[in-house]
Length: 122
Length: 164
Image (cartoon, rainbow over all chains, first blue to last red; front, side, top):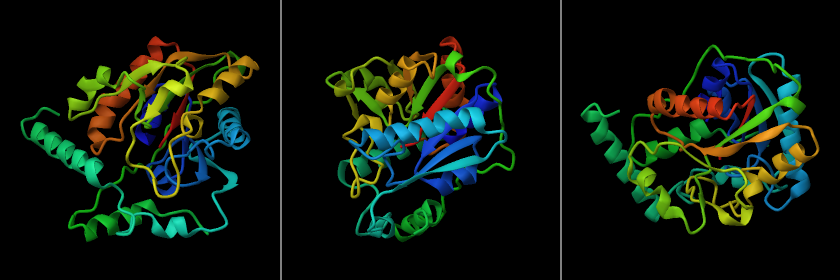
């Protein structure tokens, strides 16, 4: 997603990225970034909390006006919960990133992509 | 507590799964920047997401995308009722949260309201769905140019991207 933002920006379209993986987005480098320290999946707010969502979206829209240089990150003020154990459990054996059908599909796609690449298809 | 270090965690996780070569996350020293050219109230907004949205009951229409290993981007109508949209994304933190509320990752309700209130001029007629690609080359040479082409066709002035 960061790569798309960069491409649009290089071609004259201002962008704002909403995300929860701060290190990945900032490692790539994007023009404007609204970071929310939530689990992966909810970059524009807590599910079923319209006020939180609205606030985060407004932060991003405002950032389009106020940012004056690239790599401008704003952090939304929300915390997922007082209990932060969800952070420690991310990507552990206890909580595999993908499993079952999703993991099989991922492996299938990976193999198909490699096959395509080997014949110069991508 | 500080934010999760996904790059480090991914490296450790896949190492333990037997993948010795760590994924090389995209990194650039230079970052482009385009200042806003006109007031937001005059801007048409394009929306891009990695949330793998589909229209409920019409998943078969995307069979070509599903069977294509390069998983090309596609567009869905911006005025699709939220109740008809569903995410097929598997790669999110399903232990801690859900993708049951579309506005938590594709903020259609809130962007529509900002248009109604005059804060934004309009939304592009479609939102674009881009898959999180393993291949940065694929993203840079295929998907990103397609997204740009669609944005230009839609006369978009600014873009909102949600990384799910």
